[in-house]
Each structure stands twice: as structure tokens, then as C-alpha cells.
Length: 236
Image (cartoon, rainbow, N blue to C red; front, side, top):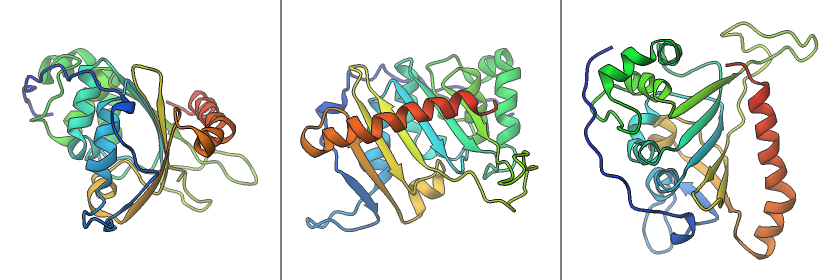
């Protein structure tokens, strides 16, 4: 671990999902009719995370580089006392990320004294040190999706892809008013996904009327409850 001081950040202004216009889908890097290019990270992900108080995520791959790409969103979530709960496939992208998560859980006091208290995002820290801090501060809680053999039901060893990967991607963002945005699509939680890849996501809002509202009630809300069941069942 390398020492770095957290830069002071101001308390973000009160922000709610309904104060912003959200598109129903984002295809990056597609060009819109007005000539602007879709940027999932800046058009959707950072604004949604910045206005959230709870972020629930299911991702096939997670990388500590996401805490660099989306630092503005994670910093706002931390400053507001919010929390992210992430279920990730156990095959993490970056070597050392798994160790960083475990160290964040077991060396909490040491990490907080080195990188700063909860709420003060360590902007000058390296990606894996940001991850250590995020776990130690309670900003992010992780659980891992352990794949099992399709026939025997036995857990597969780390690195074994003979029966596929845990690869579902979806997320739920909840703000201080209890409104939430549900996202599903191709997006993993990494810098490559957020800034480099061609990606697409579908977005639904809990307060939308008409067909969207019916879809939220009959399809997305049950899936949100299913996410909670998966979260309880996944191993930490």
C-alpha cells in the first residue's frame, strides 16, 4: 500500500433522480441525431451514482479501475453516507483486487488511518488502494458469485471456465426520495467497460408512467427482489 492523503471534498448539493432527464437506453459510442456522442460513463453512470444513496450491482467482472473512471460518482456516494453492494464473478479482472478487498475487511483501522476517514474519497490513491479504502470505509460491500457445475452442483475451482462464467450485468440506483433507476445491459464494472468498449444499457425509472410504469411493477421490481435473494445467497 502506498500512502496518500484524501483530498477534501465539499458536501454535494442535494440531488434527486427526478431533477434530471434520463434516456431509455444508451448505446456507446453511438452518435445522436444532434451530433453528440453517447458516453455511458458521463451521460448516465456518474450522474446516477452521484445522486444515489444506495447502489446495488451485479456484474460479471469487477476491476478497481472503476474507482478511477467513476471517482466523481463514488466520491459523491461516499460523502452522502451512501453504500454500494456489489455481487461480482469471482474471476476478477486485475491481479491483486481480491487481496485488496480482503485487506479492506481485515485491516480496516490501518487503511483508514493511511488513506482517510469514511466519506473522504482518496482521490490521489492508486486504484487498488482506493478499493482497500472503499471496503474499509464501508462504501462498498462485496459478495462473490461462485459458479457451480451444471450437473453435480459442486463449486468450480477458481479459474475453471468449463461450465461458463457468472456473467449477468444489472444495477439498481436508489436516491434519498426512495426513487430508483434500474439498469441492465452489457456493462461490467471496470474502466474498459466504462470508457473504452462499445456497450449498451437499458434504463427504467420507478416514477415513470404508462408502459414504463407497468414494466417496473410487473417485471423490474420482482427482479430487484430476486437480486436481494442472490445477494444473501452469495459468499462473501
